Image (tube, rainbow, N blue to C red; front, side):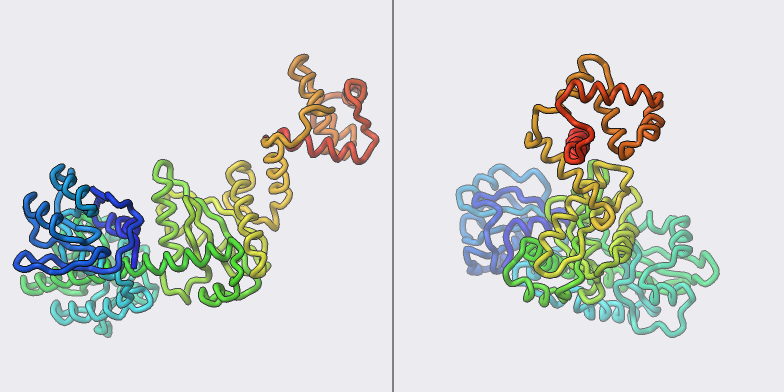
Length: 511
C-alpha cells in the first residue's frame, strides 16, 4: 500500500504531474490494474489504473466514467483537457498525466513496485541488474558495466577476465577513476549521454583505457545512467541494437529499484523519527535499524544551494541512504529541509565529521553543507542529542566563525548563549534594570557604557587589559565604571551581579 502523495513524488521524477485529485492526495492505493481497450477489466476503489490505449479525450472521459479506480494514469502533455478534468471531478478519480516518452512498461514496473511493495529490485537484491549486464555482454560481445549518473558502478557482467586497467580500477573502486572521468568529459562523452539515446563509440583516450561503446539509460527525458561495453570498433548494427535494447531493460530495473528504494527510505525515516521523539519501544526500533543501544549521536544537516535548497536536501537524503543497509554506518530521516542521521560513533566526534565530509564529497560542488553534531547518547538520550544537534546547526548558521560543522562537545558554550538569546527574544529577560538603563544611556547620549562593561567583564576585571581592548586610557575606563555604578543600582564588586550582568549583556547582543 502507498499513498497517492507518495506515488506522485516518485513518478514526478519521470515527468508525471497530478492534474486532478478530487479526493485529496492522502488516498491509500492497494492495487494496480491495466486498461485493456478490447475488454472490460474489473477494478477496485483503491486501484491505480494504467490507461493503455487511451489516446483521445473521448476515450479518457469514457474510461473515467466506467471505472471505480482511485487513480487513472494517462499518457499526455500538460495542460490536461478541461473536459477530462471535469469528468475526473464528477467521478472522484485522480488523474496523473505522464510524459508520452516514458514507456508503459517502465511505468507499470514502478507503480507495481510502489503500490504492492515489491523488493525484487531493491538495493539489497541487485542481482537482476547483474543479470542484465550478463545478457548485454552476451549480445554485444564484451565486458559490461552499468553505471549511475555519478559514474558509480551499479552492476557488471561476469566476463571481466581480459579487461584494461581502467575497467579493473572502476570495478574495484565501484566508480570510474578521476583521470578516466576527465578524459571522457574532455572528449564530450557525458554531453552526448545527456542529449542522445544513440550509442557512441569512444576511442582509447589515455593509457590503460581501451575503446568503449556507451549508451544512455533513460526513462522518458530523464537520464538514469549508462551502459559501457569494452569493444574495439567496428561494431556491427546488430550489436548496436542489442546494446540499445539492453539499456531499455536496464532502465526498467533502475526505475523499479528507485521505487523500492523509496519504500525502504520511508520505512527507515519513520523509524529514525520515532527514535528522536523518544519512542517507548526504542530498543526494538534500534534493533530493526541495526544500530547499537549506546554511543549514538544525532547529526542535523542542512544542504544550501541557493533557490534549490529543497532539491539539495532531497539529494543529500538520497546520498545518505544510498548503498546496502549494512554498509552504511548511520540511519537517516528527512524532516522539512533538515536531514537527521543517527550515527554510532561514540565519544569520537572525528567519525561524525568524517561522515559529513564523505557526504559532502557525494554532492555537487555548489552545495554547501552545514551540520550540527549532538552529544553522545544512549537510547533514551537520543531526543536530547537531536535537540543539541539542532542547536549546533543554528550556531553554524548564526556564527560563521564557528565553521560549517559544529559539535556540541566543543560548542556547548555557544549553544548556551544562543539559548539565552532565545530567552531574550521571547521577552523573558528583564526589560528594566542596570543593562536596560545603560543601553538607554548609550542610545540617548552616545556613550559606550554597555560595551565598556562587557569588555571589562570579559577581561575578568583586569582594567589594563580591558582598556587596551577598548583603546582607551585605564583612568578613562575607571571613570566609566564609576559612572556605571552611579547611573544604576549595580555593585561591580558583587560576584553574583557581575555574572548576571555578563549573561544579560551577552543575551542582548545575540538577540
